[in-house]
Image (cartoon, rainbow, N blue to C red):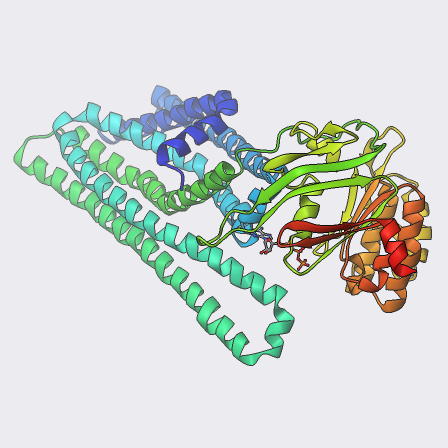
Length: 563
Ligand SMILES: Nc1ncnc2c1ncn2[C@@H]1O[C@H](COP(=O)(O)OP(=O)(O)OP(=O)(O)O)[C@@H](O)[C@H]1O
């Protein structure tokens, strides 16, 4: 959790670019507040003189009404301008942080915690931004009213001050208590999101298992939802009681002021002015009190956003988010891993998995199978090879040049990967002639032969730079991912158990035709596989065990084995 002072610093940093608008909003808001107070003063004057309102007083009244109206509109518009831009900036900055956060940091921050921050917390800030302008005007009006009352009578203002101190103390105690409740509720909401993911992604499994389904609803969703309901209700009720008490305090104060007049001679203009302004003041005060729950929630939301920002505060350097002319992606000789080591952070004090040190020399035009038991470190090795994890020791060399944090993103552009838990994007992004990434017009024609070759042309086509459908079987979706790989035409292709979901015929086609064709085109192929029937087709087999390369068999040896 981040501290209040660092939150304030973060808010100040976010607001800095909008200083002129904030100043405009403050000046016009104060103008509107001042004009409203002057209107009240005029009304009080008219009430305490004979002849009603006419001539100059009427003109003054109309002028003040116009100032109050225009000031309010200008202040509202500029505060909304700032509020909405602020929310947009928070949204963009969070997306940028996630896009440029190191992959291992993202893997540690679980999705069920990430999504509520991106949606719910940002929405909460947006809601608060909506009511911000009217609240600020209410504050300006209230301050003006208080100034006018102090000018009318200092002793009566003293009485009002005592009531105000009592009211503010009650409200701030309420605020602290309610905020603690909102924190608890927000923590529960992360758990709720996790449960929602489980019931959507595990829908089939839950349908098949009555006891698990009942437990999922009763022990998880129902329990969490009820806890959130109770905590939120308690927090809101605290506000309701505080608001009712403050409202009663107003009338008590009016009674005290009228009572004061019974003992001390008080001018009737002062007395009516006080009562008139106090009754008017109740509106803005109620409005301010009404936004306090929003403020409390927005504070919690902001702290969650600041916490997420802090976790991803160290982006990968030189990670380009703007489209640019990329250098041609080429690999002349190959990639070398030299003494590469990577250890996961230990969870719950357990022994963490350590990969390496690994020495591996991968050459262009080679087909390398990476094999080994489950959990032996094959995927972790691939993530290091791809530059997704930075080696904690050792180095990776591209054509003899060490891959540094500055060159790592360029290095990654050498690869096309189909992970075992791959994400299939609908749109196709090709390389334009200038090397610039973008949806190119020639993609539908380019994709067609591959779709036919992979026997999915009857299901999918390319329209407007996107696949027409992703409603396919798991094996077909993986074939579609392979179309991406073909179209990208990058020098190194990495497949993490690609063939696992394919039927035997297609699996055979993949190992005996598709891979050799890609190899013949000069691609370096790195294939994680458990299909030992096809191991003889590799140039090399790298065997992993407990995070170490325990064997690196070359093609000559494999051919002698096959013979
Ligand atoms: N994000 C992570 N945090 C902590 N430990 C991890 C993480 N990812 C993987 N591991 C651990 O690293 C070890 C190696 O995992 P890896 O996925 O590399 O194995 P694998 O050889 O690809 O296995 P499989 O054949 O089952 O896909 C496992 O013991 C796993 O628990």
